[in-house]
Length: 147
Image 1 (cartoon, rainbow, N blue to C red):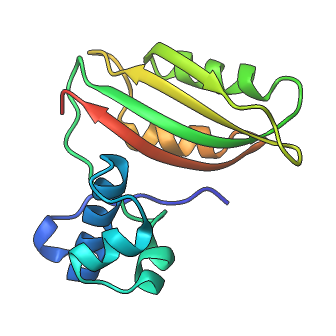
Image 2: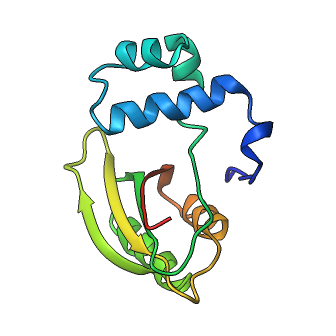
């Protein structure tokens, strides 16, 4: 079943979730080298971080010219990457970069940067369609530029 996404005001988000976002930001920017450092810096437990780390991401309203970087965990099978690329083409986004890791235990990690154009579908539609793609197990927005 594909995940549902909601857009809510920051004021409605529980403080622990905002701290998880900040901890992820610290780790991504290398200002914190470990989860322990990041959680200590933002004042949450590691268990809270691990519980929500994949479920909350800061997201700003998109506009043409915005670049999103998505990280997907996918089955190592013929055609999965092709199906992902078809979805991106169908939502009218422009592919900027693609990187796939060497598969381990039948799963590969794929990082794709896409450019949001004037006629690109809403980000929720993009994420929902990618999640519904057979062979895709997990998607995270791991980067944004121009938002």
